[in-house]
Image (cartoon, rainbow, N blue to C red; front, side, top):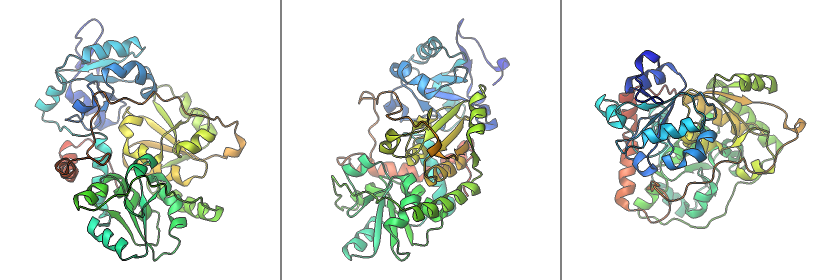
Amino acid sequence: MTTETLDRTSDRTLTATPRDIRRALLVGSEIALIDVREEHEFAQGHPLFAAQIPLRRIDEEARWRIPRLDTPIIVYDDGEGLARKAAVRFEGLGYTDVRELEGGLNAWREAGYELFEDVNSYSKAFGELVEHRRHTPSLAAEEVQALIRDKADIAILDARRYDEYNTMSIPTGTSVPGAELVLRARTIAPDPDTTIIVNCAGRTRSIIGTQSLVNAGLPNPIFALRNGTIGWTLAGQELETGQTRVAPEVDNRSAEEARAHARDVAYRAGVKRIGWEELEELKADKARTLYLYDVRQPREYEGGHLPDFRNAQGGQLVQETDHNAPVRGARIVVTDDIGPRADMTASWLAQLGWEVFVLDVDWSAVTLEKGPDGAPSPRGPEGRYKRPYEGTDNKATAMQAYLDWEYGLVAQLERDGTHGFFII
């Protein structure tokens, strides 16, 4: 965005037009497009690459989520009068390039640009594009139920966070959060004749998880559970609750095999591998935003992690990229102590259009830090959007409407035209 296209609306705040934002997205400039409404309102419609920080949480979240103070930030609302207050709040925190979306969200609509519903929308749209392009294999809930009933040779792997799995899960399923799949699937299903079925709550993580195993060359028959636990519930089938089945630890041979396959996938996606010197060069570049993520499970992270690296489970980093990396056009470095989880996560982030690197170093030579990463406290229920795939009390109409929305995302991506995704 150039200064010629900006108008001063007060002595402090500049504006950006929808066209300015679109241009920045198309040329790959860094931009943080921030919706300052509550999450429920955000989920009713927003630009594809918008991230959400409610006005009341800016002081708590901004410096964590937008670490570089001269990042170009554009704030907007939908006429509620929040954007101006938010701009002042960001400036008070030391941000030096803060602008309001001229005309708010209505200007985006009037420009004819797409609005996307729900949360984590661009990651979900990407998942739909993956299935559309790669024809990711899937089975309907009724087919999987029949396999369970017949005691077929199957392994059901739940790609969600463990807490989601523990709340409700597919019968016989085992918790294997997304980035763990390539590392642990061979240990769970060593016989190549065993059919592997990957599920999540809806569609995205089961599609990405299934395609991860396919990309990594597992010899087993591999399928996504079509529509996840939503599809299972809509089929009138019972879910389990309170399950605690988790994947076993992997031996060195299995880990090395997974590392080789995951590294090949990352290579095909164009992921770059760096060491300590290159990482220091990236840190020294103050003109670019840099996110550093350890993509292991929280328990492992808290037991010992590299300095400066935050924790985001790999599957969730891909699913919730707008939350973890709201500055579009930033750089992302991922790591884990074994390798496959970082490689698989990076392979998907690269396909999502990010400049992503894997830190490939010997962890045994470092003074590891312990404990959590200091992320802002979780948001409470105020203003929260109720996902139609959470918990066990969702209405069938809401679940079906959510699936119908996901089915339409590929067409929305085509109309929007700013995503820059590619599929290996």
